[in-house]
Length: 284
Length: 314
Image (cartoon, rainbow over all chains, first blue to last red; front, top):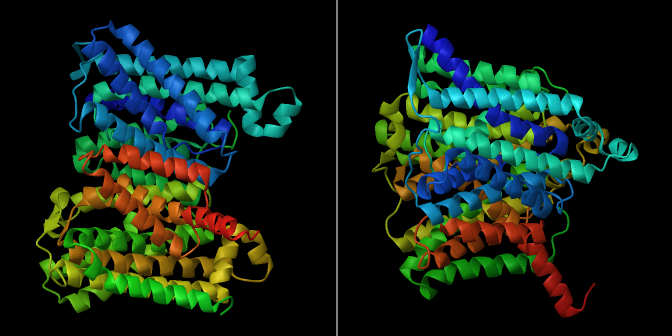
């Protein structure tokens, strides 16, 4: 029982981190970034190259991965999303194509086989009979720290309030002296950074593989849809619902069914309450 | 029927004639590539009927194709049902699948609809491996499925006639008022409803037609390949190829998805000597992305502008 609670909490923390960058773009930029999973892919592989192949210290490796993720986010906004001028279908399709291209790029550079990422923080601790790796614990702590930081940024700072404004109404924000373009740039960069960091932790939790972007994308989609677009608190709560559902189905029902309940939840919520359990359309 | 001109029919006859003499012109290897292109074109037409016309972007098309393929494969392999019975049942099952995809379209549109169809695909991918693996073959799938004919030439004629039949009937359908109403939904659903038409019925019709084509395509495809595996079918790369074929060629046309399918299949084959593995998708995707960014209306629009420049027409 304790095992389930602890494992559930840890996995949910990771899922919340994964979903956060996705929900930011969905609410501020109002577009569905299907290449979001690719940030995780890039983050994981950059960290792998820098710290495992070149032996750079791990915190610096994480920093470099985050920087690359940020750069990819900015480039994606500048060269893909902006030229398409908010055409939703076109953005969805072109980000899907981009994700496939990036996956193929990773295959080209690193090969098709999966790679094991060494734990970022090695070691195991016993908590109430459950063995917890320091690695996953670190991921959860990092995730909580990032989520709290993000909540403060969105709620308390000038740029956060500007993001809320843009997510509510582009033109209204522009009239109030907020440059929506700059805010969008900032959000895409931030989303890329978060995705890359999540990717490092996710890869060390599972493994590095060229197709590793699909599962986190589905998780992010599930969390965002069920939680409601743009709600940080909703994201946090639903990440826990989904994380616990997975752990419970693995421990008590059947491990193969771990993803099935998540999919059923997405479909059910979309049919019954399309705006999500906690959502408005804006960032809140 | 509106807007049918003599040159339309001339083009159709030319298309059929080219497809007919093809085996005399090219090698058996090329013929096998064309067979794949034919199937991809059928899937792309099916996607286009649903998404290209009505604007409801489906990311779950492999879900429909998979139902058709799996139903027919299971019936023939596990229950020894003859092909001519199994395939109509498979098409019927796919149309039931089409109703399932249709249900969310009653309430949601845009990105949400795309996401729920993506969830459908992931759901069936995971269920196929878990529920009754004795029937579906689980993760490894099935092989040794009955094939309809043997040999490249007869398989080519089968797939080519299938493509021509589907393309021509869809083309005729889209020339009727019904087809025009479907395209109108893609432009502005509210005004279609305002014109006193039932958008629900129209959408249901589009989804069922799309599922019908996907079911036929899926059933013939699995009996051509002789094997089926969940990862090859319910796969983002497969989905990507279908959507891109329709868009690169030109959405909401009939000839567009066919051109797109042939272009993509031959591009992929052209790259094979240089890049043998999955890294081919890098170049392939880049070409698709650049083409799509440059002209979202596809190759058909590019050809149109090219033709107009050539003849000096406006």
